[in-house]
Image (cartoon, rainbow over all chains, first blue to last red; front, side, top):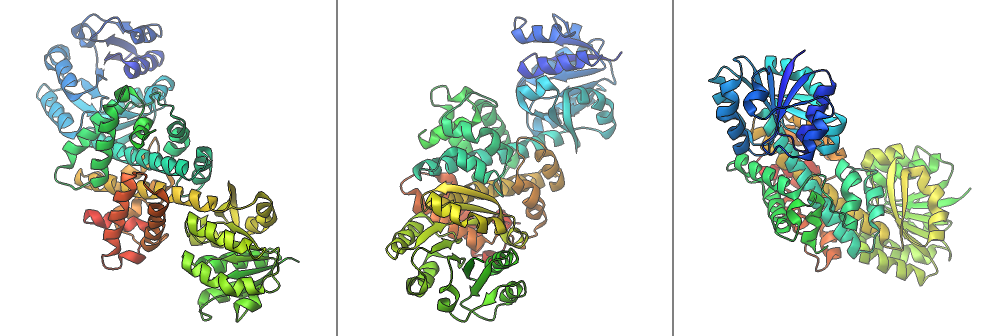
Length: 286
Length: 286
């Protein structure tokens, strides 16, 4: 039985670890805060709780990390993971941390004879629970082949994107797309309201043709009715858009710049940071 | 056999008239310029050419118009159509002319005892040829019921949107959506190129999740490879976005304002006006 460590028992990580444990792997799990409810959901399904990173990783051939930002990933890895992991093992980071951060971590791990893949995900908490996540993977092809059976326990759409950092790059392109879609949906719904068109009609009619999108079908009515419960939180979208700003360098991307300022506006409204991205419509006075 | 007139034998109108003729209607057709190749495609499939608007409409119970802008529609209707059409007949305008223009025409026709529906379409030349257009219809419900069998000969998705002008309103919301999607695709592809990610990977990976859209699947590779052959021309998108600017009044829609200025930029580049909307990527230096 292959032994795996999973560091970071948030909503995403705990569900992913549970799917690995149920898939027959021995999964040692750790979290900075030991009292989280999510941990129990993983251990109930077979994951094994460890009090320290050292205990979690010292027998692991593959270490998954799902902890949020690049600085958090580095704090977990250096020195805790690298001091206790056997040479030739693989570290897989599922956080969205940007291209340079992934490349830096990959290079540092290589100096310890450790392999690295960046593997950011999309599909949210529901995708994590159902094992239907999308993984965007950067790393050496042979490392990808090695971790692929594990990813298949947690995801449905798994894509090899290129060298370390390429998974991050594709994820950032994805976030540019979805943020523009959301801006378009918010503006179309705002216009529809002004013109006395029921929002359900916009979703139905426009969703049947050239304006069809996953976002319109799944978030269009939430925009129109003010249902701002988070699928993906505005604070996380803003973190990703700031990574885009870092990645684009001197490229002029005025749509991305604009939608970033609109999300920043809503982030600073009451409760805005933790609302779903569809709360962007609050910029328009909803 | 019901008798119909179709005014405007462009790429769209000729294909729509041909589908009506093949569906068993007697279809009289007219065009300002009599020498267009498209006319022959309609008459070969059973439509009957007329030298004047008067000859085309005088026996018609329903008159379709597909001529471009609001001013063109008015020039065709007044006095040519209204002088020769029997009271109780219906005029159906398939052009995208905006909400106030449709409402003005509807009110003027009512003073002649003529019914009116605005019925802008989406689906392009291919949809017109295959009879798979989307119709967004505004007018009285009983008028809609009367023309529905005719629309079903030309379209697959036919939506009743409300009173006269409501079809225009939904069409404008649709154009707000698709223009934002296009801006997002152009910026994502520009970022992908900078990050050395193959465009086909962006289409495949992002198209499998929350960034999935008809536009990404159908136009993403054209954006990336510089294939600017028109499905829907930039000059037509700009015409529609200017109608949005008219309709929105004092609403602040910064994304729509931005994408309008970007399309205007490309409109003024060599050949930009007649390229497909995916040529928006030329703003980004493609």
